[in-house]
Length: 512
Image (cartoon, helix red, strand yellow):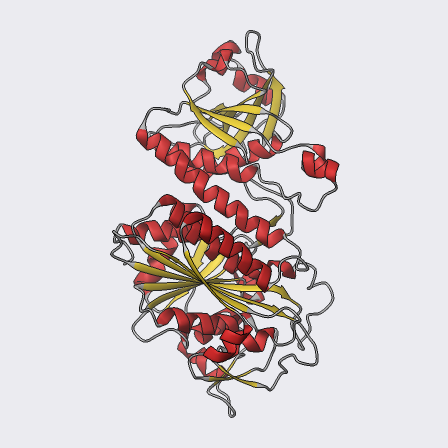
């Protein structure tokens, strides 16, 4: 992973392979060429004050994520200047928002793959800015090369290793707040990148048992209590949802409980993640063209796992329990069939009308298990429905909740973390569509509003009086397009930063 340092060194004398500066678009009042952002004053001076003009000649506009390379001026030890677009200029007297800095730093880090050291001269007005740039660098430099041949694995994408070292210029190495911001960025980014690794790992190597083993190793490393329920324990406990989904696979299901506790905690936050390590749809087999990326259907469990470990590494003064509901959904002679009825851990029965609506079944058992501990709030995370992708696109996740105020808190946490999210309703009239003449409830309802129907199903398995929110990350969890900002192709680690921010808010007594 890229090494980070805070530096007050003069940019001209800094030994590095590149200097990264920020460039914004001309303002509405002053339309025209790009505007060099604060932090790069020494670079502008070295170009005799005409750096913006040089960049405009090279075609730079300052648009978000745009990268322009040019030779460093005479007297600089670094040979290259990389200008990265920040998008629109902030309003007068306000700095660039954290997400703009995060995305710009990520785009620059990606562009500098194969580089040993880069100095980032982006606008840093306070420790929060330093943390945002640090996150952007660490997330943008991510690469997944575990399955490349030895030469490629050593060099990363296109034969180029990720950026090895980044110095954040303008940071204050002796300032406790700056150091804390960077340390937080490192902990969160490392765990988020671990979630990305899990999501990107092919399902022949990451089955429920293997995922549980990864969680056990991390728990041991970071002082987190872990409990793994295997098939025998799940049968004994009556976890019919998890068992029903995993019944068709040669790889047995698991329920993993991770418990981080703080002696100073006053709140308990429970996180529940859908962990379908591969989703074929089961007997209700997915059509051709929809199977290839289904290794990502455990992204919710990966996010919960990463958030619990990050909370432990940060020493947050809150108790955080993570529940990873792990199963592989496969068709076979032993698989659950459409029309089967499962008795869930809560005691309720569910008529399975579609075996490809399996995520809600494993989550239902885990939600009920989490409810037994009476936490202050439960948040579940899942790549649950294609309907949510149709509603919100591929970069925004939906938030549903049984409490409007808590839903607002979760959305605020997502906004603070830089993750696009949108509140969604739970219309009561849709609940009728899940009525079953055979069981207490069916796992399918009306087709229209399918993402909301799934949320209503999950609500049935939340303990009475417990505040709960559901994050449907089906859109942003796996990026099938090209990389952008700090987001790579493949697993993204969506919702990790939101969950960590929510845990921080819980520690501060701000859950409601």
